[in-house]
Image (cartoon, rainbow, N blue to C red; front, side):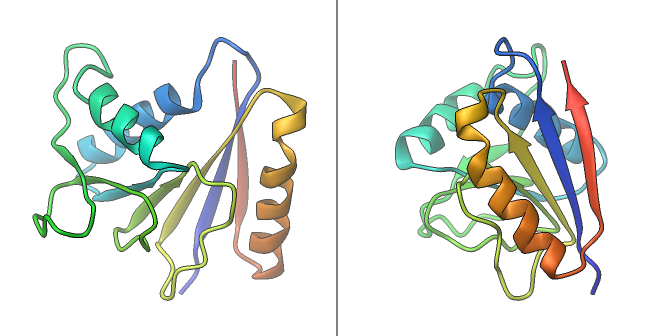
Length: 140
């Protein structure tokens, strides 16, 4: 299976990874695609759970912070410390998605701060070594 990886480069400090994540999750939801969001911490997972109630404005995105006990199959799951199973994975973590089998699409959000981009470079190398198609999108 060919996995497509998209890197979203945040070029403005005004953009947060969490806000961009919510927009990408909303787009996947509109297209009828299930999405798993990999959070970097339990705190970030809880923050995303709250944020998805109000972002994007005027929309409700059915989601859950899945701690492995819920079992409901909602279109958007926020995960921390679990492997993604949905067709689309938004990875906010510092390590590449190495699930077996991998998601069909992996969305990586690259922070605007130069010192925080090193993890993204390593993830890029990981995916490139697997010869997966890599795409880059600049967000201002």
